[in-house]
Length: 209
Image 1 (cartoon, one colour):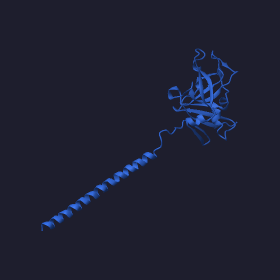
Image 2 (image 1 turned 180 degrees about the horizontal axis):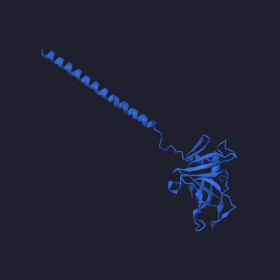
Image 3 (image 1 turned 90 degrees about the vertical axis):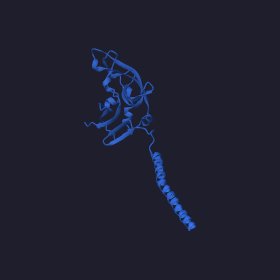
Image 4 (image 1 turned 135 degrees about the vertical axis):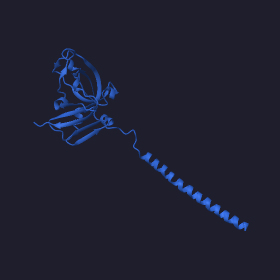
């Protein structure tokens, strides 16, 4: 009788141990799957090194986006430029510069549109919402140029540039960047209100005559 009871107890213990083992395995399986899923998510997360779009140029629904690398792959243009604070004229003459800028001619960006109209204006907008309109002539360098005494002279021209470097250093938010509209040339001085800081977009508008 004792042997029979011992067998029953042994069998019962074996069943309990087996059930416990199965339960442990069952509980642990979802945790392993979750860890696997987390690893997959981490693998599929985009790299933080992906570049941000700095500039959008648009015309009649067509839009082109540029990162800094995209802009640097375009034809580079460098030159010196200064600006004069015209609001203080004629009482006070304050000239800033010259600074050396590197970037892309605005005309180069516009030529990327096959359907660019014969006559147009462009609106340059900054990240803070401020905007400035320029004519096609302005883009091509026809603009008021000043001398050191604050007088407008008509024997010089300027090149309109979207700059990403100043004096060899990349522009930052603290220096009016990362992109800035500037005017450069041979000892050229232009009005300060033409220089647009923190540029994020250029919109082309056809001018019909």
